[in-house]
Image (cartoon, rainbow, N blue to C red; front, top):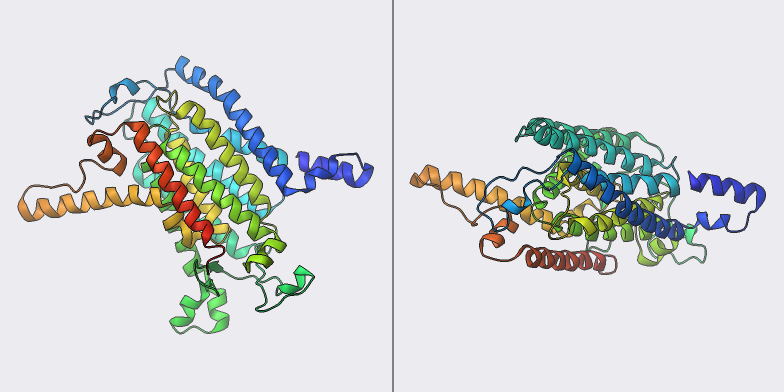
Length: 407
């Protein structure tokens, strides 16, 4: 809203300072500061409100050190993250930008699903919460929404760099805007993969593959949204782990958004240029600021848990960010913490069932899954586990940033 106000004032009245709002870097920094400020201010108020309403976490007995002390800690803290993200976005972003519309809807969408789950667990004293099939249905419906918008909206286009071009005018280094469904393959020089080629491989011609590319695109989007959302949900098991890991991921995606949405940087790095994607930098900055502000209250010993309101939202939004930036193939590396947490649960379940069927007694690979609980069982303190996971997350983020140059 402020962007549109100051743009109007700058164009019509030339008010000093109003032109600053045209700069993505200024608005991104303003969004970070605002989201941090909001999360710190409203965080305490929300914690006190949840305590008064006795909306605390019911902790299952898992035999973990310090577990029972967390009984009654306020949950649904994801509300802090959502509010601290959306308010700066509404203030500093171009609200008619298609990418901002997709991201705002995704945030609210997943927030509602997570809130319903937390509400049923706490207020209705239902330990199961929202049934798994309804969570998955919500994730699938978000994937369908994002996939359909990507396929149908005419503003979602790319411009590819002309091989060997070195014009002084950067715009001439790129082909015209193209409505295509190419994504980035890391570490390759000519690093675009077109989802439509999958249909060509099975015998469809050029026109058919363009018309029916949604058959590939939408299932891919659904899979990514569901996997990353569930990965973030599983990672949210000890104080500060999910929020800190997510802040690292989102900050990295903000950098990708900046270079992909800036024609000079795209030209220099020989990247796919995504018109109008610069606004994603501001959303990502607000999101990262909200996550860091939430950590003020969520680090050990946590004063509040994010609950599914936060974890499902975080995972869903990270997935959508990566998809719209055409960086979804980097997710296994960038979201490596989420991936190993997911895999630890899947492997544990498969191995237990296999050994029970073969030997009559189920055996386990890990002392407990997800993986962070395995290290707790080994006697590591929560803070040490979280810090080391953050360090791994930073290393993975740096590795992903290197892909911008190493191709």
